[in-house]
Length: 174
Image 1 (cartoon, one colour):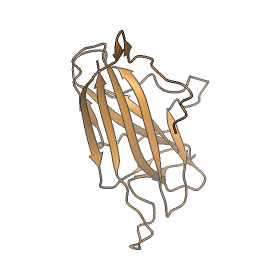
Image 2 (cartoon, one colour):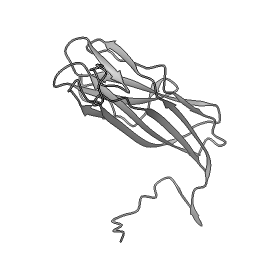
Image 3 (cartoon, helix red, strand yellow):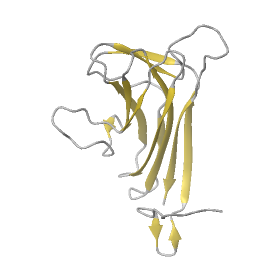
Image 4 (cartoon, one colour):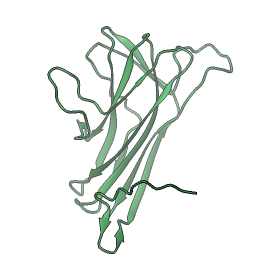
């Protein structure tokens, strides 16, 4: 039995029903990557990135991402911001002094595991030219540290070490 508490219809309703799915694109990354990222710096991985060409500027683009991440620094966090054509989207925390604005983060340190960061946001296309959605990763360590994607920090070849897969899915709604 389902227990529906509320229904979100913001941005997808029209007279006569919900918006229509026009296209779905996906990109995946199954290999690993890592980056030595300075304190206060950012890593913008070359993959995964996903592009879509909307058919109408008013259409909505649902962005969904799952990114397995690990960090090589005890008791520190990794933060994800999704970029739209290389710039941070409006779906980030409010400005407050010198605090870094981001969208989602995870606590992660154990050299034998990673955690997946999940991202969901309904964006307005804003035009009919191709849009590229990509990632920016930061951390809160006070020194340079390594961020890992799709892998644990530990790489000894035993069965309780894991490899992950990242993806970005874009769905255009009329």
